[in-house]
Image (spheres, rainbow, N blue to C red):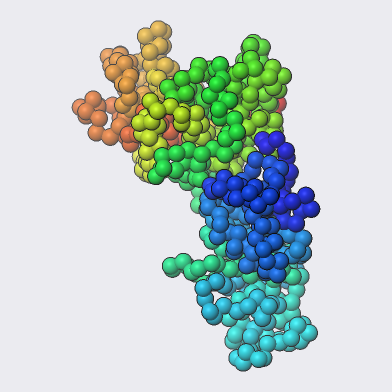
Length: 609
C-alpha cells in the first residue's frame, strides 16, 4: 500500500539496519519528526521505517554499544504493539527478536536430543545476571568465578550437572555435554515453524531474545510481578492443523470463540478510548481526499459484502457522503459508472478474491481512489490499492468466515469514525460509538456462554427441517443475510434472510406453525416497525425464536424462545447479534455430522470468477 515498496524497511541505502515488524507503533509520528530533524530521509510511509532509522541514530551515538543494549535502547522509545526482528551489518550472524502485544515464537532445531528444555531470563536491573560472554557456550559455571572454562576447553570439558540450571545463555548441547549446531526459526505463529521443528519457545511481552553463534539469550528490561525466570522449550506433539485447533473440535468453532480477542486485535493501537481518537495509519495520507469524495462505493463478495452492508448506515450518518454497496460480480456485469472523485473500498478476507480484484482494476483504470480492507498482508488487493486497513483478525482456516466478519465490521466502523473526525456536530455520537467498541469484547464473551443452550435448541427446534426464515430490519438485515449464509454454507439447510418490512409483500404466505423462524428484535430506533412483523408472524401461528435484549418487556409474557443479547450502540448491535447465528450454523452442521471447516463445493479464497 506504500508508494515505495522496500521490504524489509531499512535504516539507510547501505542497509546498516533492517527491520521485520508485525504491529503498530503508535508514537511513530513523534519519532519521525525527531529523526527528520536529525537529517534522516524517509523512503516509505511505514511506521516500521522509523524503527530502522531510530536504531541507526542510537548506534551512531555509540558505535561500541552491544546489540542487546542497542535493542533495549530502541525498545524503550517505542510505544504500541510489535513483534520485532532486527538485523545489522554491524552485528553479523546475530539477530534480535522482541515482543510486546504481538505474538512471537522461536523454533529450535537440533540434530540430536537437547540436554535442557528451558532458557533463563536476564534482567537489566538484576545484579546477579551473568554477562553474555561469560555464559556463552552454555558451559555450566564452576563454583569459583575464576573457573570459567575457556572457549578452547569448552569443546572438551563436561559440564557440572549440578550447576547447569544457573547458566543464563543457552547454547544447546547434547547429553554428553558437546555443543551442537542449532537452527532458529522466528515467527508470529507456530504453524509456520512446525514443518521445520516441533521444539518451540514462546516469548512473553517485553522479552528481548538475542540469537548469536548458535546460542540464545533472553533479556528483559525489568522483572514483571509473578513472571517466570525461565522460558520453557515446548514440544508441539500434534500435527499442524491439530496445533492450531487447540482444545476445539473444528477451526470454525475455535474462530468463533477467538472473537473476543480478534476484535481487540483489530482495535489495538488504533482506538484510544481515553483520548477518544482513532488512528488508522494506512489511511492517514488519504483521509482528507476521501472526505472530499463524491461518493464511497464498497465492493465485496459473500461475507465481506454483508459486513459492508452492516456499516453502510453509520457511514452515511457520520461521513454524510452518499454510500453504495456493490457485489463485485454484479458491479462488473453492469459496467457501473465510476468517476475520478469516487472512493472505491474493496473488502476481502484473503485479499485475493478474483471478482473483487477485477473490479479493483476496473476502478483504477477510471482514476478512482481505491482503499483495501483485507486480513492478509501482502495480498493482491493490499498491493494494488492506494491505501488501506489491515483487519488483523489473525489467520482464518475455516471456509465459513466468522472472526473476519466481526473484525471487518470494526475496521470499517473505525474508518467511519476517522472520516468524521473533523465534524464537531458528530462528536457526541463518535464518542458513544467508541465507548461501545471498548465494551464489545466482554459482551461477545457473555454471548459465547450461550453455546450449550444454543446447541440444545438446535437439537429440539431444527431437527429434520428443510427450510428456515431469518428476519431482520434496518442494519439488522445485513446480520440476517450473514446468518443465513452461514447456515446455508455449513449445515446445507436452506435459509432465507428476509427484510422484515417485506414480509407482507409475499413471504408471509410461507409462515405457519411448522416453519422455523428466527427474528432479530434487539432495540433500536425502528424497533416498533420490527415488532409489527413479529406480531404478524405470531398471528399466523408462527413460533419464532427471538434475538432480543435482556429482560425486554415486550417478550416477558411471550411464549417465543428467546436468545438474549447484551445491548450496545445501535450501529454496533449487529456485531453481537451475529454471534448466536454463527453458533446456530455451527451446531446445525455438527448435529448433521458434516465437515464444518470444509463444506462441499466451496473454497476459502475464491480466486476464480
